[in-house]
Image (tube, rainbow, N blue to C red):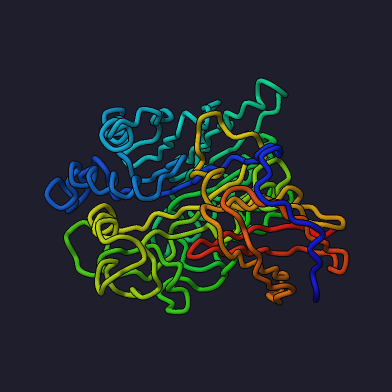
Length: 424
């Protein structure tokens, strides 16, 4: 199929640079942080060692939201992470929610330059509480247009054990009841160590196949199956980072997908100005080559070596991350991952009637490869265009495209950006 370029305007300074906001989410099971449990103690699960490792991981990932499981639910431990991991090296903008739960709790930390904390609640289950946090994006649009974008974060740690499927199902049923009863809607993320072995578990089905389609969660990687101990899912396993037994961390190597970030229909379909960035879901340190091995043996080149070592020393889980695009004016003074002066693609209309309009922000002049792919994986267009350094405006005619969802991939050098749009 031939795609016609209507016109191209390169780096015209009279055009207002259009940027959207972005936030990165990271969830992490911290492995008994601040707790002694059984054979886990300060010798094999030392808090200061974990602080050093977590700082390395956070500095690499650069999240705006960090949610965690297995944190000792006392202020001293929550503040230890806040003050000795996050707000260090000149950083002062991290804040946190209130502690809750008992023994091993959850927590949410957030970048207060981008996000404001609104409320916190708990969902009570027969096994362990589940935390609900509501924040909003601090765009200038809030004051100028009274246009506020809210995001809800539900953080859970489901019951572990292959025989505990009923308990896990009861816990996620409580989550869905809470959402429906309290009228929770819009942008919702459900995240945590869910201890799931298969997508057929009722706990998972309660979330992604709820009777009410408006509140069904989506799994961004869309890879249902028997995850536990299955080589076919080696690219998605998050537990365990350890092959050997150190007396605390689970052993056996990476062979279970326990850690998740699920998204509401609103986020997957950009219904309330928050959209999942396609392809951004990642298990940090997972290269697909460590099935039943430690994350650091054999060599793992998916992230820098110091990060691999930190992942091994920090926990027996890998953190999972994704990125959200916020359709609002970015927070003033925030580079948003250098979104305006580094390589970036902004779709000016992701619901297309006849032509797709976009800006490509290039770090340097050179070739930009543009590929458009249908949802069934067919390449509908593939071409190489020239981009000047800075802002490049393109308008592409899609009149010959069938209605439906498409993926556009733009490649410049080693940089790759993927966006989604709908041909109406």
